Length: 182
Image (cartoon, rainbow, N blue to C red; front, side, top):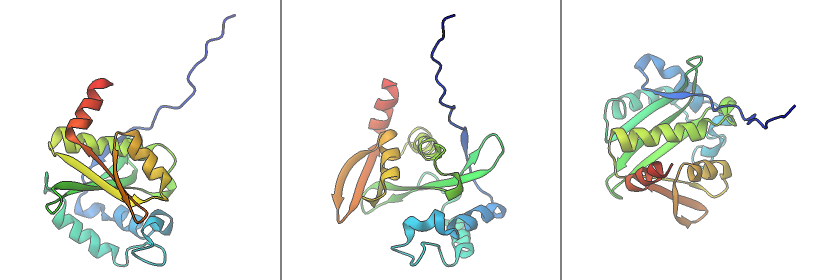
């Protein structure tokens, strides 16, 4: 009997972008109030990175981001199989730099499942294919190895490093060229 090697790697769980309604703010507040999820934010919001008034922040996000594409975009990452929210993504135009700053947060209990890469791919598709923006930029501490690896895996390029901060970006042209090669 001949045995064939099978790829036993599980398929990445499917995610979709979900534009939250005002009544969906519970997940946002839960994430911003969770010390494990927000630990990366501790240098700016000591001691644990949690946002002090997350409910008010949710109200501001509704006004500033929801429905303001292409200048601003915000969505939850929603697992298709059960509808659970696992994180969020966003971008907004930075006129001082002529690029779009972006962000992604995966809720701590959902980390390590490939959602970061999937979430970034969804965000890239929305930014470049749907909204036609020119360039996404992100920056974070050099100690955040997982964030760096996932950004590099989806095509972000290093554009600088200063004071232990990495600067990464991806242009629409690079993204489309990478997609054409695959």
